Image: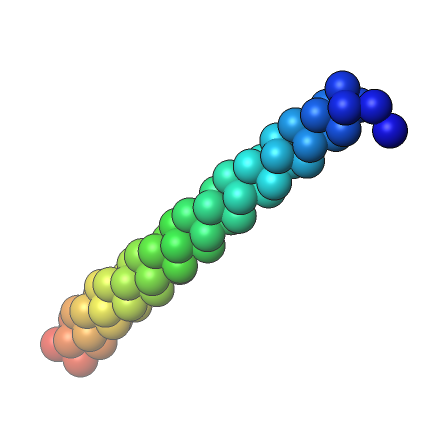
Length: 66
């Protein structure tokens, strides 16, 4: 194999390794973002459930006063 072909192959392998490393970092960032969004979603669900519970309490009080 000529030196030029070997250099080209080496360069392509280096670029592929760099691309794989970048994709791994991006995947990790996306996993972290996904976890953050899941946590935020759970917090919103809890807050909404709390608000719904308060509305139900008000409705129950209004019905008992009627």
